[in-house]
Every structure is written in structure tokens, then in C-alpha cells.
Amino acid sequence: ALLSCIMRRWLMTLCTAWFCSCFLQGNNPQQALAAKTISVDRDGRNEEACWDGGEDNSCQTLDFAVGGLESDTAILVSYSHDFSNDSFSRVGNLANVSLMGAVANATAKQQEGLVEISCLQLGNGLAFNGTRGLTISHLYWKNCSVLSPSNAVTSTNSSHEQRQTHHVYAGLFFYAVSNLTIDHCGFTSSRGLGAALYDVTGAVRISHTTFQENAVLLQELLCVVGEHELAPLGPSFLQQRQGQPCSSQGGGLFVELTQCGGFDMVCEWNTTSVKYATYIIDSCKFLNNTNNYETSTIGVISHSTSLYNPFNKGGGLSIQSRGGNYGNTFHVSNSVFVGNRATWGGGMTLDILDNTTNTSFCLSNNTFNSNSAVISNNIPASSGGGLRIALLSSAIADSASSLTSVHLVGTNFTNNSGLWGGGAVIVKAAPVLRKKESSLVLLMADVVFESCVWESNIGLWGAA
Image (cartoon, rainbow, N blue to C red; front, side, top):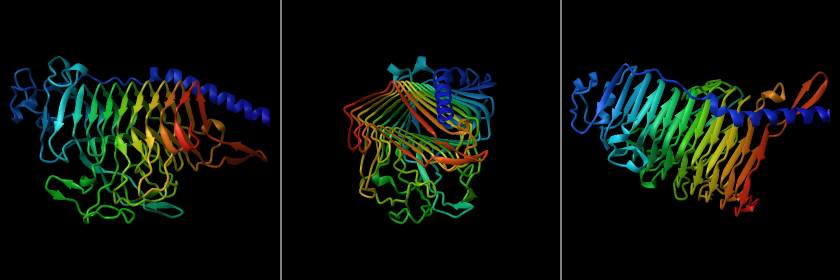
């Protein structure tokens, strides 16, 4: 029995190592050529005729050009300018759409080859819903904060969870999008999240992109769209501020595979919304993002699997796998996490919850430096200055091959700090005992650290 257990673990480690080294070759979504190109340039005119495309028929601003998006359309932006729509734009149920900066004519961020899109007021931004085949490249999004639903849970019983959906700000928001590519972009100074992805499926690639200084400002916790205040959206655990609370979700990049397959108020606890998705986050920078609110009036709930709290987790990057999602793969590689702050997982947090099975995570050749898990007034503890991994899935696995695995290779943790686990912390559920052929088989999700460096991390309990 002991030999069998060792062989199973050796095989899983071998397969995970192969996944880490080869996975980058298998996630390169090919998008069909656009049938129409809408140009945006300084000499254009914001008239509906520019939506027809053509070399001599351009729009003047991106926010106007988005109104002409349809399937098989590309928008080519040739100069940096303000995004000044009255509230925000939503793009839904289209296929093969691209938003691209024309690098040669960029007038700002030229040293990085990006066209800057600067949002003028809180609530400006873009939300994509149900788009199939979406590419965003060479655009630098600044001060953008579109208001969109989030996915928190307030109560539970034996068969389902009752939730109230409240809202978050994000520079760009993606829901139920498939085959998404974000390449050579930047997200900075959002008054919430730099970018938020909910139930994004298929082949997802985010590369050569910077998430910098995205954080909620305390005075902007009030949910506002344009001049119209939203009705109270917060559940009972959110203490109302001026009667209209907004979620305090901040940070660089937020990814969630949801429990309900959306933002339904009631769902079965093991609903499958995403399966066999492949995520690559490669050569990205997560710099000085904040997901921690020492002075906010946001209340606190348990961060257990039965009562889910997405707040204050992951300053730079947060990945949440919920419900009955299975067969998904994530690879975070060649990226740097510097100066990020959160209560749990200053640089990054990875939560594997509910009934998640057969999911693989690989972190390779990343650097976590000077991130911190910070104690807030409302939360008495913090953990994982650089990285927090929570393996809390309650799934019953049939075999070791159906368990979730996490493999970190060639990753450096330096100068990170947290109360528990200055460099990293792992929170694991109890092993699964599964009866098989009149015997009990011990099954436990694997976390493997290989060729990692731990230096000058600080923690009261577990500095490394």
C-alpha cells in the first residue's frame, strides 16, 4: 500500500512537471480575420457613418467607435485620448472582435508601444458579456472603473446557497467570454480591479501586460454610475456607508470560475459553469496593487468554503475556482509581483473551493518581491505575504488523477511579509478517505515546490 501511494504521487508529480514545461505550447487561440475595421484617429468624426469602416471614414474616439461593434469587427486606435462616455459601454454576444492600438502612431506610453485610453470619471469603462473570440492588444487603460456585478454568497443550507449580488469596479469587465487574448496592455489606477474575469472559458491568454496601482479609494466606496446612485446592493455583512455600500474589491487581476454559472441568487452548490478551460498568464507585471482596506466600513464574513468572501484576497492576482468546475488548467509564468498588498495573499491568492476537481495550477519562473499580507481593522489576521494557496475543495475524488494539483517551479520569494507565512502560506482541507474495494485510500491534493528561492521574508509564524 505504501509503495502504491508513493508511485501515485511520483506519477502525479511527473505529469505536473510535464504540464508546466509544455502547456505554453498548447494555448495560442487563433482568431479569424475581421471582415470590417473601424479606425479611430485624431482627424476622425464621431458620426455613425464611421462605423461602416474604410480608410477615409474614421471615428474620433474609442467610446464612440465601440457603438458600431458587431461580429467580425476590429477597432484600430491610432492615438491616445480620453474615454469619456456618460457611463459605460457593454459589448455582448458578438464573435471575433478586436480592439487594438496602432503602435506606430502612439503618442503616449510610446516607450512601451501602447496607446493610452484615459477614462475621465468613475464609471467609465468597458464590459464584455458573452463575446466569443475577443482580442485586446497594445492599449493602456488608465483610471477606468466600470461598475459590474460580483459574486459573493451570504447564506447556505444543505442543498444550495442564497446570495445577494453586489457590485465592483474594474477597468475592464469580462463575463462568459470565450477565447480571450489580452496582449501588450496596461491597467493602471482603476478605482477597484484592473480587470475582472468571471466564467471566461476556452483558451485564455494574458501576456506582456502590466497591472499597476489599482485600488479602491475609501471615499469612492459608494456605488455610483454617472449621476445615479444604485439602490442598496450589499448583503447584511456589508455595513452600509451613507446607505449605499459598494464592494471593496481591489487589486490587479481577478479571475473567478463561479459557483452558479453567473450571478444568480440561488444555485446548487456543485453547479458546473466552466470546464476544460486553459489559462496562460505569461510575462506580466503586478505592481503596487492593493486589496486591503484598513479603515473601510466593510464587514467581515468567514472565508470558509460554505460562506464565501472574495474580498481582500490577492493584491496582484486572485484566482478563485468554485462550484463543480473541473478539468481546467492555469499556468502563471515569467511574471513579477512587486509591492502588492492584501489581507490574504499580498502578491497572489489561489482559492480552490466547493467541488472543484481535476484542475491543475502551475507557477513557473515568477518573482514575488516586497509584497505584504496586511492586518486591517476589521480582519484580525493576515497570511501569505507573497502567495496564499487555499485547497479547500470538498469534492470526493475517485482517484489521485482527479485531484487538483499545484506545482511551483523556479519561483523566487524575497522580502515578503505576513503574520502567517511571510513568503507563502498553504491552507489545506483534511485528506479524503475513499473506500475502494474494501479498503480505505488516502487522497490529498498535491502542492509541489521545486527549485524555489526563499530569502529575507518576514512572518510571525513561518517567515518563509
